[in-house]
Length: 332
Length: 272
Image (tube, rainbow over all chains, first blue to last red; front, side, top):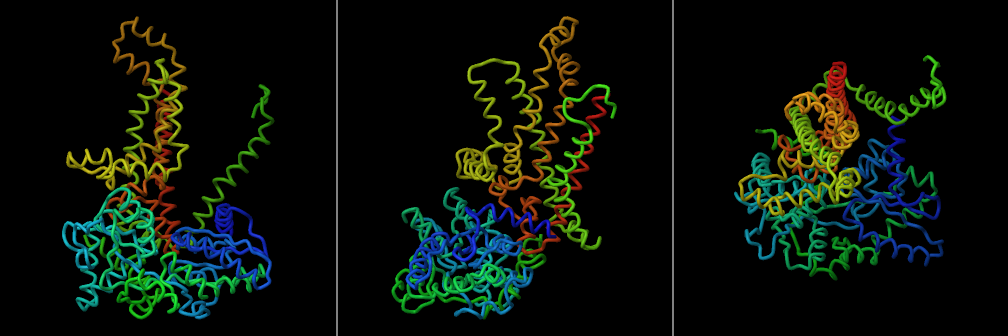
């Protein structure tokens, strides 16, 4: 056990550019698509922190699949804060790692989620298959690209959004299951992560529609110049909540609690919210949201806590071994 | 441990000790930790994990694609080695150096490049599409990726052996009346077969465990194109360390048995 931890910690440590030092440095372990967001935010936070009369801090970033990042922290990566794709992954820091208290999500406003996103459709220019809503995804001949929910946090949001739509429209769990089964029959490739799916759709020209994080869809549009793809917002989607948390055990050992708290709290400030919105994350602050109202279409959104009873019940029901996702593929 | 011939490298004790420490740190302890971890499960639990339909399907897929890739390299790789050793032509050194590229290239890069090429919209993939079959996202694509990654093994193990067979041996056989196919069958094959088997076994073993290059071209459809290493990643993403190590143990045991069989076969051939 300890050997495995040591080996994993050493590996994780190697992937960081520099050694982690106490006091004036902070390590933020995050998931894949937040790279650009935190690059901008770290600079802004540093300015704010120094304006309050503190020494400048070195903020280090580590990015990767949300689950893998959580495991690295559990196995000994000394993260001061984690900013991951799902609360379910941070829950494991409590359950498996005993690094944070069970009620971690109550410590910051809005269930510790300073910004949100949602799931939208990215279609090819002109929308040749006329994809407008979830119902169009189960039609024969439509190819849907989405990663494997067993290995990708983003894909779990995709799955749940489709489920919520079908359940509200057709009224029962059984019908919802039949709907997602039909949908996944139209999926020709299950990549392991969101980036892989984007490559499949954008570069390899596979599929008619990509189910994507809204921020990733905007980013793809920005990078491709907007003449190849269009974003389609379905009638109903899910409020994707990527939460943040201070890793108590690590900050207490390193004496960085004050800094780590300030770092996360500043995400809720007007400037932090604006940076999130500029990077295509939906801000929580109503004032900033109003400024960016044009960018984010108003959508009917279900939430993981209200509609699925939180990750603690959604994860085992849908995604663990033997869950709904496995049943879809093992029916045959 | 006779010391009649004085060894070039210092004594047996020192070298064996070094070997053991080295092997322990790099191989035995990590693998032992894996077995220890899986051993926390009862036999029934372990069996339930490794006999699940998806695991069995992935096991079959991983081993058959690795086998075909190794066979393909066994044939084409032999040809490559033969050409490189026996003929002198412009650009030979460059081709010779290119053989090692699959080792140097990050496997993910190889996977993405191969997928782009062989996907239905890709340069080669569209021809396959026109002929009515798919390469990427099928077991064929997986075999292709594995063939690429394991290409150097057969070539590099055969080259020195082929170089050691002087041309005169073939000529002598021919002078004694052997037809070309007899020269091949009775002179060349016995000489290179042990090395060929080594290269084949290396390629096969590497193919079973390969993850990075396959994951992009496989399509990862459960029961159809899901490789065994992917199932390990899936288990890890569920924080199911025991499930993951169980599949790891399964892979190790099956691989070990197969490699052992290949080694035994090799010894029988060498004795003849």
